[in-house]
Length: 598
Image 1 (tube, rainbow, N blue to C red):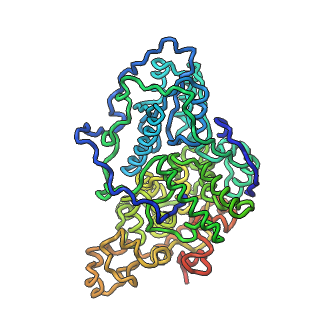
Image 2 (tube, rainbow, N blue to C red):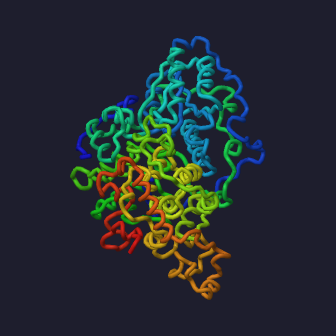
Image 3 (cartoon, helix red, strand yellow):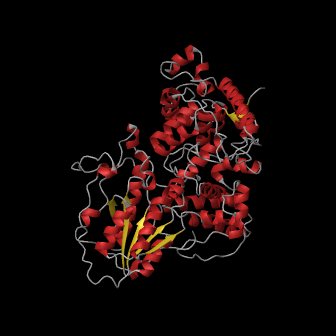
């Protein structure tokens, strides 16, 4: 999409894998999560087991003539650029910010310890910010409609605002609340600010169906116009933020009461800090780094030189939970480029954000977007079932150090770089193990901090050649040895997450089974004993899988009938294949992949 240079003022309430950065000057990360109080009650088995909240204890007398608003946080866990929150402030005399633990909100049904902690800290951060302006965040447990009925009766609520959750898995919940509001005569405002464009409007502009290619998506949104600019900070001075006498009953529960257990002891060493405050700090670092790259004459610094070992600086978890406004991100990057270069900024500066929009839009109306069956854009591939190999992949015990290091980092830290995601996904599916992308997706949903329902599913379908990709037409797949060497040329990443291989010579680090026994003994790592042998032989497995893909193609009534990219540029942008990597003059797919049959 060709970006026009013009201003658009934000309109509150009606517009329905990023990338990473680093900064030496950033303060060191906090070493550990603070210990919670020893007298915290024993954790509940699930959110639905939490005790029922008592009556609110608020007097509803003479409130019918006032506007009593509730702003319902779900995603969009921030105060800045929150148009539905601003609407509540501007329209109400009294405002109650709330969060409802319904067992599914923000992915809590499927997420593990790290994601839960990130969500909890994001809620803590909102509560702190509200406390600074005289309010607090109220939390409830149970079905949203039940909660809202109670609030309408006891608080006299007559306005409910919330940010649009565009994915289809949230529509039943939100539609039920909208019906309740209509039945009770309650005003309801739903604003679009989790995405740059309203996915429903994009679909409508395309004739009622999502645009099936990235290029088509760009064409459609160009008819809508540029994204609205962010709406700024809220001003609470005009609204009363009431705190009830029994607020302790509605305060954020103790973390131990609602979170799952740690899946790995090293998760206690916290690296990622949730919340809007941290998001904005990292965002400023990102802008400075982008500006430095613009001045040096190049763009996308983290794509140009992927950083696998730097401190946790990615903004993607903050976009996923809405701690950082995607509109603020989009416009600040483009404005920075324009100010420094005195020219219109190229659209590819924020290509990863547009991919985010694309996958959100592709999932509209498709509740089966995260699975193969019932998903009309996904190829029906006859994947194998092998629980033993799936478990070894999940635990990082495949015998391929590059793959295993990536999976170890995923479980312990909750994040891996985009190049690592592509590597492990290809290995599990069409590259080596021929196991369904649905199985890998479930693992990512559990461990990956930024795992959006639609974006994560879209990425898995792409990499597995189930949709969006043309890999069915070529013999390439990511080689777990060569790709690792290219991305981790000194072996520092592998050694950090696989300390058993710390003394293995670099020559053998990415294929240690080839090391002579004497070398293994000197390194203190006997392959097959201290570190596993490869669970498959890559070249043979990839060749066999290629034949399976060919048979899949031949079985299709219409060849390559699934969604495919429009051109090579799309593939390069999606796969993080810059023109050069680490001194290589020209980086092609063949540099990063192994071509079979030669």
